[in-house]
Amino acid sequence: MRAGLLTEKILIYRTDLIQGEDGATNNIHTFITSTKAQVDSKAGDRTIVNDEVIYPFRVTFTVWRYVDIKEYTDNIMWDNTKYRVLSVMEDKANNRKIIETEKVNE
Image 1 (cartoon, one colour):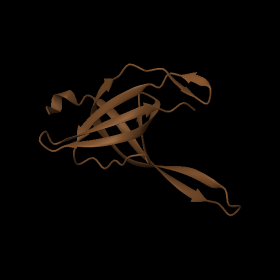
Image 2 (tube, one colour; image 1 turned 180 degrees about the vertical axis):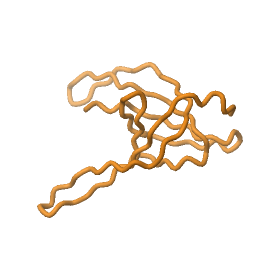
Image 3 (cartoon, rainbow, N blue to C red; image 1 turned 30 degrees about the horizontal axis):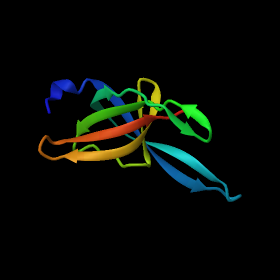
């Protein structure tokens, strides 16, 4: 992987579940790191969730292997939009991680 392809700055946040005194759980987002990434957009597909048609928007981020990122607990902030990490695949031959994400609809 050429370093010149890593042109976009991303921020990585980790979500921790904290249980309060009343028993309710709260999501706490902790900043982990910022790094450069290559960003590839994928076409959104149409799915039906709870009898509602939604169009999930998926984005693939490519970063160096040393970046600390985990599946399901981490979020990526890019271009003022939050993305949920769905999978992380290591490519040891090219010294990179390929991160599949989905846009968070809040």
